[in-house]
Structure formats: C-alpha cells, structure tokens
Image 1 (cartoon, one colour):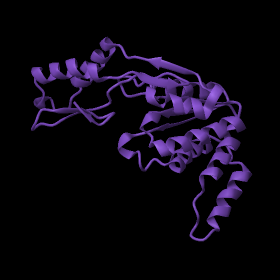
Image 2 (tube, one colour):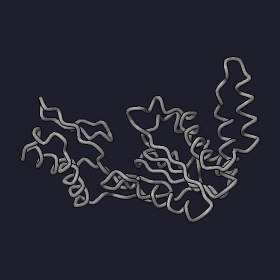
Image 3 (cartoon, helix red, strand yellow):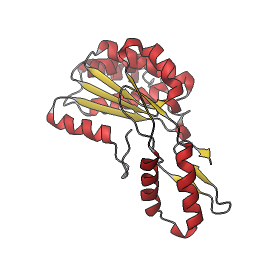
Image 4 (cartoon, helix red, strand yellow):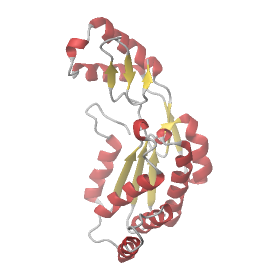
Length: 231
C-alpha cells in the first residue's frame, strides 16, 4: 500500500503517527497470492480483531465472556465469522478506526464476498470506522455492489519513470550480483514497466511496485514475486 523503496508503507506509517497524536486505532491486512487459500475470512477478520484488541488498555467484558464461552464448548470451539464481525464492530465503535486491506484482488473470489460483507457490517455498526482497500480494477464492481454508496474509488496508473527508478534501486541492493550482467539488467528495466498494469483502489491510495525479482540462474528468466507471473 503505497510501498516505498525501503519496504515501508506510507499510508500505514502516516496513520500510526496519527495514533500517537489522537485517540484512534489502526489495523491492516495484506493478501498474499501464495497464501490466498489459507487466508480465509475468519483468519483475515481474526487478524484484524487481534490488532484492534492489542491496542486497548482493557478488553471489553462482552468480548471476554464470548471467548470464555467458546472455550467451554467441546474441544474448545473456535470463534465463527459472525462472532468476529460483532466483536470488530464493538471494538471499532469505541474510537475512530482505520482498517487497511492491501491487494484485495488476491483474495479468493468466494472469500472476497464474505470479507466485503463483513466489512460492510462493521462500517454499519461503527460509523467512525474508515476502510482503505487496494486492488486491481476487475474487483471494482463487486466492491461497489457490496459496499454501495459508501465507497469512493481512485484509479491510478504508475509512471514508467517511477517504476524504472524503483527497479534500479532494487537491483543495486541485489545480494547475488554475480548472477546479473548488463544484458539481464537492461532486459528487466525495459520489460517490467510494460507489464505493470493499472491498479484500482477503493477508498485510499495505492502505487504498483515490484517487491521481489526472482531470477532463474539456469534459464535467465525472471518473475515478479508480487503477482507470481513469469515474464
């Protein structure tokens, strides 16, 4: 989410700085293509809930009772999605909250509907909650259908000069320079910017960047780790 050259997040860093100045909370989640099947709606919302609870001076009694009640069930039953959504809504209603979800397009389609539905319920129960999401343009329709009038979208196309500058900075930090030569460097610099597609972002800002470049030393081919596509 607006990832800088050093791997930091401009949006998250800005919001965290605001937390220090104001009574507010920030929680974030990143969808990873390689782990998309494991990142279920329960795991995703559970991760957000854990972050929100960790920022409280004391956990609400209602939530403590719910956790204890689940432990008494046979085998210690885990919380279900409706329970987690209610807890998130209860916690976010206590203070202004920002929830950031990066790369929503990498979420499994069947999970995406559940996640958006859950976020919609949280917003409905907590008017002071704001959600920033990023993803590719093909998910715009489902986001607008699920969240309706509550969404604002901004479409951003990365500038070639910025992509080239970023790539050069990454290549300068290559830990295996012996596997690189001038021809391969030029190939990467010239080819990757052409493959960076337009990004879509509901409620917030996003810049497309390449997080890792994986090089096959045998074939000389390379991959963009962020989308797992062979070039």
